Image 1 (tube, helix red, strand yellow):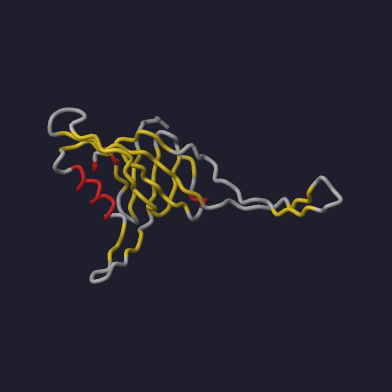
Image 2 (tube, one colour; image 1 turned 45 degrees about the horizontal axis):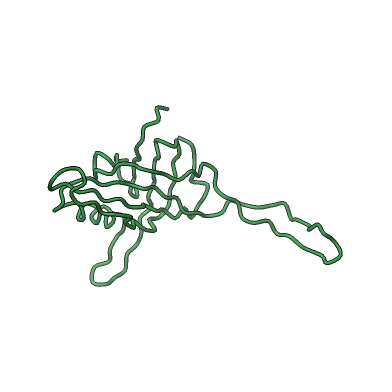
Length: 156
């Protein structure tokens, strides 16, 4: 597979979309996780022994998967671009504040992994007004997925 520094995102059962082409998001940094973490082993310690007994069975553990993205755009639209993207990751019940998260499948072409989870946050790191040229800004943010089923982390 050709490794490109980009991510693709599938929201629920929708089409797989290139984050740079559709939303203008550039991949800056991404999680190093290629194997899900495992839960701690059950152990028993006895006062008369320096060693501990271990029950050697475990399972994969849910985890957070983080990508740092950069949105470059017009100063007048950059905030709404990120907010509209974030809002598209939920189904909103009208008349109440209830939001139902949609399943997000993230294809990290740079690291060669695919993972599915639910958006946890799209928290901003920094906002750089007029970073590139006049009337253009850059917004750097962490896009965090909570991977409830670690078996969804697979190689591309």
